[in-house]
Image (cartoon, rainbow, N blue to C red; front, top):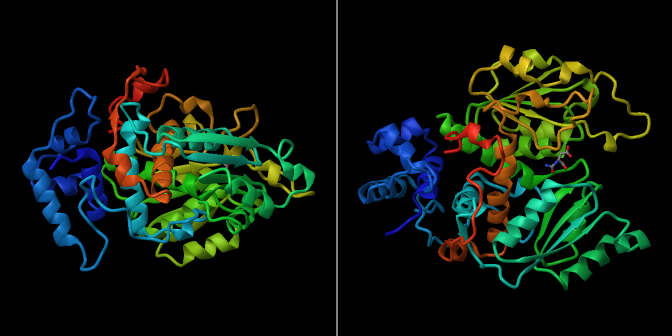
Length: 431
Ligand code: NCD
């Protein structure tokens, strides 16, 4: 049996909920050997996992699967994921179970080879994505387009209201039905909460929520959680029991709403919410987290709130969503995250994340640029992960995940070893 060993091993560790140390011990191999099997194939230290280990891990997985569960062994030929209520549309993180998140991450792990330009597939050849962005976007729009194109599909898009027929008074219903005749998947970003669900109710073509006002941004939360898991794997940690500090505009920050809710699939987290009182997390999201066994604390003190955190998730102030009369009261340099703050209050393994864009203008009090060469800053590993995760979402919604894994071929063009000039600094931490 030939399997892609990294997705197989990562899937096994997630299913068994074991750290790398715990997994190496369970399988009876050294941690060093496990690390070399998890390295990307083009890495010089990468090693092939012996066949006997593959068989042993498969047996452990089979034995630990509850009767009737969808837990299975990843062979690259497994059927489409059965868990969760994913599809036809992806509108909210509420649609996910822990099983269906892990199914999606298994596919994303396999898509890494394409995202890193080592492999190609044409599995969506002939399919068309409509990317409808009625609000500003750089990474979400381009990464959805790129993910669809890397699966072999083509992309049509429209940006802003000005150049769409909504400026002529067309309803969401009519726009949705019209686009359905042209496309096989639709990504919508819209300034009003609930509008993407309304869009989805007028079509049988899969609609993905690319951000609906201050509501949700489910695919960002999925790539954030995927990043946390991958970084934690390297740091020998589990998501269960972690301390996550959310900082900034928790009222209007839709990425925070989706990620905080998605984290309720895990256990015993410590969540610290750090914001000025006027930008606190909305009650409905707080209530959703309260249903879990997490310990939630609120703080207006950034330094005290981030102390001991495993992840700091910073956000931009969403000024564009402020209602008339709302001001930036209380948002002072006390909320700026910079090198000095991190050096003074955090350990060597704390992760600093941000959905981006960060406001880099003077006086913005967002995430500073003086952490750019610090390995704790995970923001560009986070944006890179947007591609495999969004590829996995399309492959799942369009039912081609297994074919995509089987149809991969070697890429034929040359790409630089590191896409960013500073990436080489972080060599080895991306395993
Ligand atoms: C965020 C968004 O649009 O919600 N960005 C993103 O999609 N990565 C955050 C923001 O705009 O501040």
